[in-house]
Figure (cartoon, protein in one colour):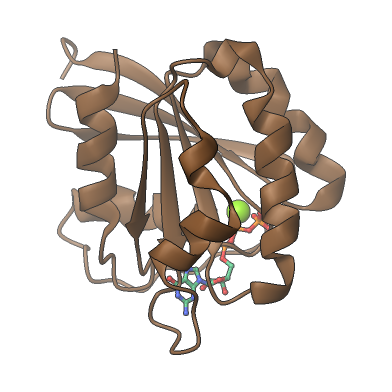
Length: 173
Ligand code: GTP
Ligand code: MG
């Protein structure tokens, strides 16, 4: 509806972590096509999407996670009211890269107090890191200047996504 509050959400994380799949699944969740499979291709640059949840209209900036585009992320920090950081829990080799990118992001003062939701995505893959392991490897306990939460998700089935968005909605100001 027209009276809904509009919030900008920035979605970041390494390439192939599942950002676009998560957004497509969240868009489908509010339609009759909720169970439809989601087809995605790697994002080039970024895409802007919208979906609504409760009294909020989310405008989502779906950034590419590819190395050559990661420098775009920071251009949107000043205009976002929430951040979703997607982690591919099956990509153990690149958790350290995800941590480096996270650390760069956390240095930005514009993001002070901006709620930060981590999706520990691809939990359906048996060898995946657990959310606790992710939190330890990314040293999430060191984040003390903003509310944060880590939620396990499977973007293919949609499991965990609503829980994450509900948490985010609670902390958006
Ligand atoms: P970039 O746009 O390149 O930054 O990637 P992205 O983060 O948007 O990833 P994308 O949504 O394109 O998904 C990458 C691949 O991971 C696709 O083949 C998805 O189907 C797959 N994928 C996404 N989420 C999950 C998940 O929860 N489990 C599994 N098994 N695969 C997933
Ligand atoms: Mg994408």
